[in-house]
Image (cartoon, rainbow, N blue to C red; front, side):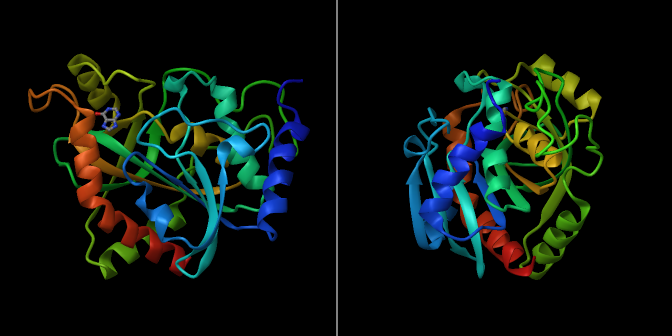
Length: 273
Ligand code: HPA
């Protein structure tokens, strides 16, 4: 079988040998939010290309490194640079990093991304806690023969973006005077941004923000019993809302401007978990 248990274990065993002890907290950083990786103290840095059976990042604004070290007084494993379906990876392959994290001991996973606001009450620079997602395109990352070591064939995803973690994030937000919105992340497979008509449809269906990542990771995490906190940085209004085109430049600029706020939030959340 293509991705049997041993496939993931080989990658995890290699990393384990490099990092020593297990690590409980996972962190995956979105476009232009990678700066937090540099704040990790006493890091062990592993290039993705050194890890057997791992994937390689192809997006310029995403680094391709695994960093293990201390953040918010906890030991964390961080992917600086994530993988997306639009890069050409099949959905099943997108399960790999998360399953490897699980084998390394990860129990809590924080996922960040940049997203376009569908909801007109949101604006660039806002932070949205993901309380649910809609993914109507493409397959599940955990399709194929089930691997019971990770989880059951059928599994519940009604609390995938764990309420406890969202509540904790809200408490931290209040303490740090960081305003947090909350809403539904609508997955779009990209790489093209959406059409205005698609955005109108997504709004009718209940989406608040749109993006091209995160959901495959959250689904895989839910399957193997990892708690997830999803944080979207609103980097632009989605297509058709302002009449201006959506640009990568805008996404990156808002990312750079708001990075400090997002970093402070995450660091404090990890401290208080
Ligand atoms: N659409 C999809 N993905 C995105 C967007 C968007 O408007 N902004 C940032 N990532």
